[in-house]
Length: 161
Ligand code: THU
Image (cartoon, rainbow, N blue to C red; front, side):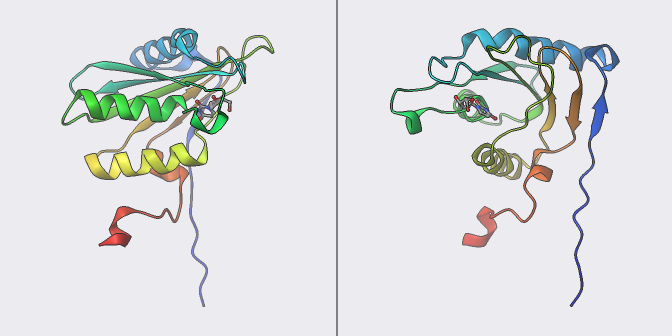
């Protein structure tokens, strides 16, 4: 027997002012895009904004439904859009922000389990890491260099081959 360790490291910034200008702009785009969320049930508005390798910017927001399981998270709306719009939609960086009714959101959220699974497969498919910038409307920001690191021991498409 031996123990296997998974080391997970990410960068923590105290405020948006510490980010590189390009990263700060992408996070601001995500903050602004929360207004496009359709979240009348949770009132928790999430936006994911991607910068692609072709320099295009694509936005996804959560889209809820009165039949609650029919709702879809911002991250998966985003991945579906990129995949539908571009044959080689390589995502370099993905900024995720949110807002709710508790006042300005002041800490990062990270993708839910299903979205982690979708992000992992998208990275694998494009053979390119998706760098994540996670932040609320203010406060600390996390930067994670690849999405798959959020899902250790993932079930991947290689298992089906
Ligand atoms: N949500 C996202 O869009 N992304 C996440 O990473 C977490 C949760 C959405 C789903 C639902 O519409 C609302 O936030 C509350 O869970």
